[in-house]
Image 1 (spheres, rainbow, N blue to C red):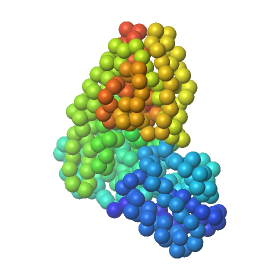
Image 2: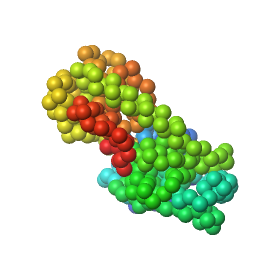
Image 3: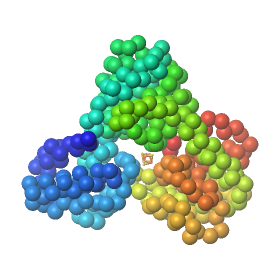
Image 4: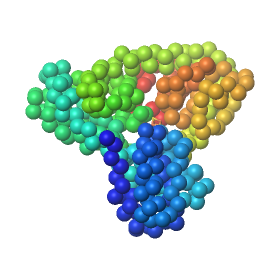
Length: 331
Ligand code: SF4
């Protein structure tokens, strides 16, 4: 069960005495957010707006929506980072999963025997890292938890940022990810090039994700090669608060034009196949917002992420693109 740190929200409201507040959380927490909003309104009698636009990470906080609502405080729930208040009037609220990994960790001891393991997870299960480490250590498995960097805590990964895993990849045999998110585990596998296992505490299952990651990698490379054959490019700047990379977009534009390509610039908030179908005379895109938009979704035309865009420039210069996803950060 997911537990939201309500005390922190209540303490913050008491401290700042806002006239109104806004809440935003991933889709899986919407019902809990509704209950929380009722608690806040009962307790403090202030308007509490639930922002229903998606929030995919600390890069996607919907601060503009909170400003439009004139909310004095925005609480973003469920995206733990190593700071509480990344922007003025925006507070990050932890939402931890209280399930334990004891059973599934014990189940995979035989599989991991005599291996050195890189252990990581996403925000909901961070508090379980040391418990699982102890179970492994007590059974002769060497465990390393890589250091956090940027907004990441030690052992924490985002869907595009894998510093704790990449910094120790040469010291370990396998990655072990705690949780149900194949999305994060696939990123770990691709950024390290190492076998990667997912420990699911709900189904008590251990799944190797390495082959699935390879399929995504093949699809990503194919898109890069397809893009290398076209003339007309669109470069898309994402409009979500933390995903705006105008300089990277303009750099891609300059580099592609040097190669004789034609480039148009676009900007949009939600980059979907449907929206891109409205664009004419463009045969391939590079989007410099969330890299996982390109890697994990279907598009009729190639839509490259930033690392794929760099690989494209290499191909156009007859350079090797081996291991182009083996990076700590895909932006
Ligand atoms: S994977 Fe996408 S949504 Fe997640 S942190 Fe990275 S840019 Fe943001």
